[in-house]
Length: 160
Image (cartoon, rainbow, N blue to C red):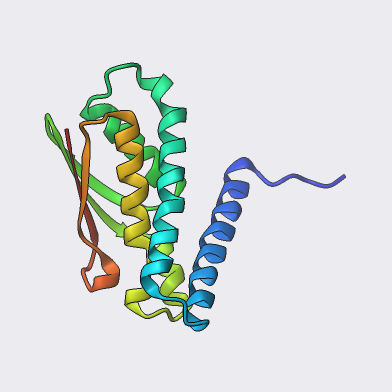
């Protein structure tokens, strides 16, 4: 009888496939000479849809009023699903997040991608903005630092 993979290992394998297939697609588009801005726009559009879908699934858990705590929980879930190592400071209306390790960044580096073609920051920004707006229309999210541009971390600020 064949033994099934544990759920966590299966989830990790699926995430690895997603990360590398997405990264390889971007690399192939770069090698084919597709304009970087077109690639970013398509990538961001895809991630925005995924963020909205996430919000639709999470909204029933939080109810009508989604406060900063609920946004913090949704961000923590997304970071966990994507295996992003981070820390954060939460105040009454803000979240300051620092992302120290990211498998998306690691994949682009492993594929020897130039930093300007590491589209993970813009995709992450599109995902997070869309998810937070879907949970609370007053939410804002800004990515103030990112590793592909040379920062040692990615840093995001959430506000309501």
